[in-house]
Amino acid sequence: MVLTGPSGVGKDTILREVRKRRPGLYVSVSATTRAPRPGEVDGKDYRFLSIAEFEEWIATDNLLEWACYVGNYYGTPKTPVLERLAVGEPVVLEIEVQGALQVKNNFPAAMLVFIRPPSLAVLAERLRSRGTEAPEAIERRLARACEELALADRFDYQVVNDKLAAAVEAVERLLFEEIPDEPAGG
Image (cartoon, rainbow, N blue to C red; front, top):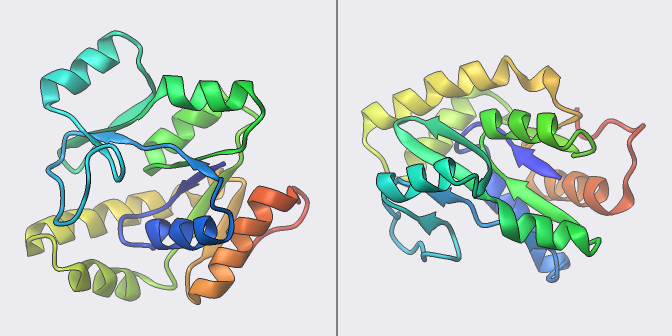
């Protein structure tokens, strides 16, 4: 499963809640060149790399997907994901929209789930309330969110994160009950 959506939509929060219910669930740790936010731990929240290190990973085909997002590289280390898939474990990638579409091209059986905000106003408030970025960075993320929302129909499922409990239920159901005929959450 690939879980994606605009920055600030609640992907981390939804996934954290699913993992509380399913502690053995493997979630890939993405690599990035952005600086760690307060409290983030290298290897747990992200693999924090220099630009040179990230570009070396690109050159040596060590990434399943990668993209540049608001001035930083983000990508999924390939080996841990392939190892889990080889033994039949479910894998969740929580990545940005461009990367999600790359994964679908490389792994057509991947289930793509797009998390939507209830509105752009709610998304803007969520980004501001984090208190981790300057107003200009928030505006860049909101502009990017509009572009990403325009791509939502390219995804297998869309879940609106209006009520957290319902969004968590929808994602968990999609991941563990494999119900490809039933749309989730709108």
